Length: 185
Image 1 (tube, helix red, strand yellow):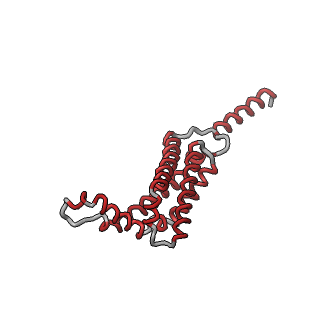
Image 2 (cartoon, helix red, strand yellow):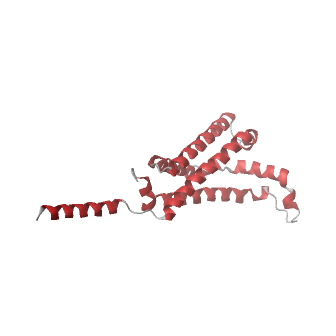
Image 3 (cartoon, rainbow, N blue to C red):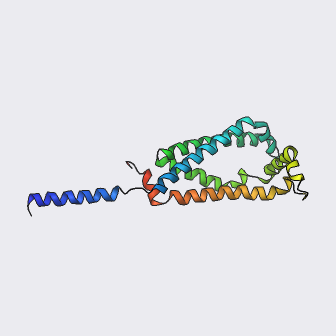
C-alpha cells in the first residue's frame, strides 16, 4: 500500500474517531441541565432568605427539639443551602464534581427527608397558618382547617422531595447528559 493511501486511510479513521467522541448533545439534555441547575440555585436562595428573615419562627417550629439541636439543625440548613448554590452553579458550567455534589445532596435529602419535614414542625406551621389565614378556609363551612391538613402537608412535602430527586437522578444518569460533564466536552 502506498504512502498516500495509508495517510488517507489514517486520516479517515481519525475523522471517524472524532465523530464518535463529538456526538451532538440533544436540546433536551442541555435545557434540562440548565433547568435543574437554576432550580437548585433559586430554591437555595429562597430557603436562605427564609432562614435569615424568620429565624425566630424557625426556632418556634422546632421548639420540641433540645435547644442545642435546633442550633445544629439551623446551621446545617445554611450549609446545605450553600452546597445547593455551589452545585447549581457547577451544573450550569458543566463540572462533574458539581454533578456528584448534587447526587450527594439528593441522596442525603431522600435518606433524611422526614428529618427535613417532621410532623411536629409542620403541625406548628399549620397552626400558625390557622392564626394568620384561617379565615380563608372558614368561609367554606366544611370545618377544614390548615391544622387538619397537617398529615397531608407532610406527605406532600416528602413526596415532592423524593419525586424531585428521583427525576434528578434519572435525568443526570442519561448518557447525553453525562457526556456534557466529561473533561473537554
